[in-house]
Length: 124
Image 1 (cartoon, rainbow, N blue to C red):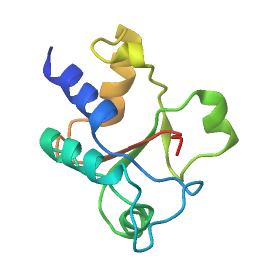
Image 2 (cartoon, one colour):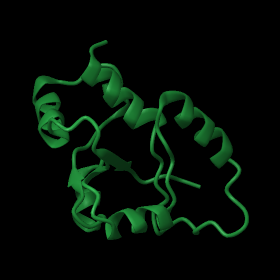
Image 3 (cartoon, rainbow, N blue to C red):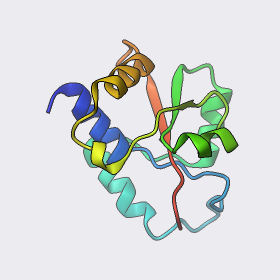
Image 4 (cartoon, rainbow, N blue to C red):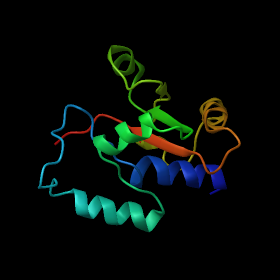
């Protein structure tokens, strides 16, 4: 698997889980799945972020990408500010068709250190 495919695989399937406004913001208790997901993300070299951390990121001067991987009809209904939409399916875990690969490469750009926030709809 080449670098981009591995990066995409890691990002999409074990990386950043973003709690959308439809999920309660953490109080003193975190969801039961959080610790396991956080450990998996750390093993892969990524972090989970909370809604508060995302808000802080938006308020900072840091250059980052927000990628909404939901279907376009969901993206059109509502999405995070400045989010780009590039839908991914589970079948695309290891390979991407050339068109989607090119879109993804263009979206990421050349800065390999830029923060990438990926989110999708999740169920509790």
